[in-house]
Length: 330
Image (cartoon, rainbow, N blue to C red; front, top):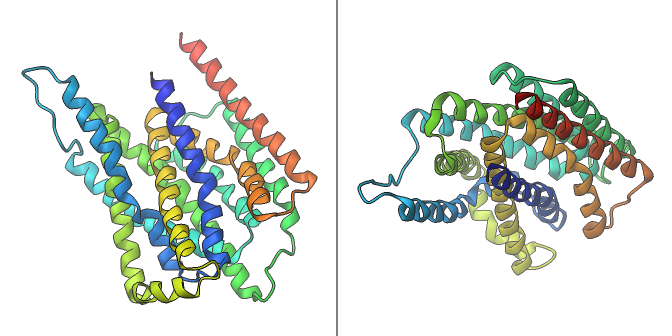
């Protein structure tokens, strides 16, 4: 059953991870300009989490014993505080990611975003004491090399009309986002293990994710208010090149796919580890590029096919290592 839940969360994660850069590109590419708003959207869809929470609560009520009671809130105070703190870091990460993708092509974003795997490995090793095997290290190397290969063609890809300073600022922001994201993955796993304890079931995971998103939304709300973004939404929708309806569809899509990403990550970390979630995200990078070709007619040179092969090889290496470890335990 654990493997089934892990698979379901991995699929949800894949939908969110592949959809987020594409929907954000759609927002910025058709006339969207508000970076704080784009960051806010990445956590502002938190009410979506209430649906699986409600389903989980009803399931727990149905399974309770006649003399037992079901807690509505499973999150401990220390875990609540940890979720609030991680949410603030996530809010900063959302802003950096939104800024980076507003200035860089998808291929460059993929190259920089691949470095999150290296950060995840480092942080998971030091923070959660994740044990590294030769297979997991090999997977990290293959996935990172694959991501680099498939983005090599991005040399000289500065968009027309964009200054060098803006381009490199976007580059720096995306690198900061990758590092912060890797840190957040490890902090979430650490919170589950050290603060949640044995009572850290999936209901508590959902509540943790909910609090994290609300905290990140509060962080972004302050930025939006300072930049007067709330008052500018209507005007931006009017000037959106695809029309008002498609504008609101685009921003709604950003919020929805990002919640899929966060729910998937939370579930994968709960049922596996932050390192596994990082590797899964990296193996999806070539798929993001394929979708960019399909929906945005981006070029797909041979280097990306090689990158896809290396990424899949790395993924197989990691799972073979996990299989060997499981066999040794048995």
